[in-house]
Amino acid sequence: MLFKQQAWLRQKLLVLGSLAVGSLLYLVARVGSLDRLQPICPIEGRFGARSQAEFPLRALQFKRGLLHEFRKGNTSKDQVSLHDLVQQLPKAIIIGVRKGGTRALLEMLNLHPAVVKASQEIHFFDNDENYAKGIEWYRKKMPFSYPQQITIEKSPAYFITEEVPERIYKMNSSIKLLIIVREPTTRAISDYTQVLEGKERKNKTYYKFEKLAIDPNTCEVNTKYKAVRTSIYTKHLERWLKYFPIEQFHVVDGDRLITEPLPELQLVEKFLNLPPRISQYNLYFNATRGFYCLRFNIIFNKCLAGSKGRIHPEVDPSVITKLRKFFHPFNQKFYQITGRTLNWP
Ligand code: A3P
Image (cartoon, helix red, strand yellow):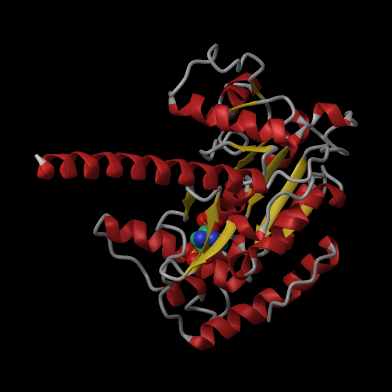
């Protein structure tokens, strides 16, 4: 009898204990997510001069939670009064550069309660077939958001595709354009590494980087090689400047985004006229990945996929030197045009 009573008591204590731990965890998580919302201040400036009451960030954060549940299919639109959800055209686009850190930038900006990302690369402006489907097709590809939020998409091919600046201009001549760049030679090697991985997956052989980057006949840098051409940032930017003034661009230092993401993100918040909401709390270094990962609150965090942060093949140092020398004058011009000097060799 005594043994039975003890067992019953132990079971009760276990249930109560679990409840207490569960409640505690919930409270901690809640406080963690509320933490980033203080103090509440308005989003103002470029996205329209609106009253403070129209941009309560706390409400946006709350709604974002509902939006998340809605997207996961955990609730219906009516249940959570999401009737004011809209699919908005982007107010800012990450136009490139491929392998510059475009995914990391988009995901990190998405930590901001007023930002909603288009998860997929839409390739509307660079793909003739998609472009022919019209702007409504593009808008329908955008995620649901609240009118006070801004949608951001990224398609790195935009930066290097001839027709894109004019097409984006036709959609919105005052759109904000983000370009994330890395030291050009490193970017070219990263680009090569991605293509190489694709070839290896298909069991195809592929040339070494050195063979592609250097013309064997002249021993000069091979400007026909796409990975090299893409890294001549100034050439591409000049085409964009025929349509947009330089003030509409913001250059993100992709190398610094890897080692010190917060200051880079704060510059972007400023450029987008968003109140500073991304904090050190949202970014933590993951030693296993070797990169910063994202923390939404005490429970939800994520690192980028394994395809981001590949190990690069070793490249002949003389080829690296040659490439760096080649890019140098283009880099100087890029700094001069953009007003952002990066410490590239
Ligand atoms: P590597 O694979 O060469 O290291 P993109 O998204 O434009 O394709 O860029 C990919 C690059 O983003 C990666 O290039 C990686 O270095 C960089 N990156 C920047 N921040 C990162 C992060 N937090 N996690 C993973 N990769 C990151």
